[in-house]
View (spheres, rainbow, N blue to C red):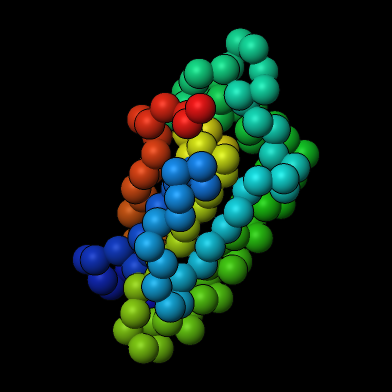
Length: 137
């Protein structure tokens, strides 16, 4: 199927923090939990604490993790497989990517996945649900 023929996005990617709750899900949705998957947490590094996943130093820190590229390619592969199934029913795909707070790793990985899918001709939009929300105490 040629996804680029559509003006509407085929993939709606949402990043979030489990500490704030999971966004409402639907059937045919891919839920990705980044907690404990080998991605370095910028919040654990003093000079990066308080910064978010749009900060270039945070992006570099997360992407330097040993599992970053492997995990991103896994998510892209899972999304593509589910999208191909959904597209047969003319359904877009919703991907939820979460970490602890939704401010760092989920944002970096979500943006990377969206960039790859878009580069492969699959229109993708991203919404960062908890990017500007403080960490719950």
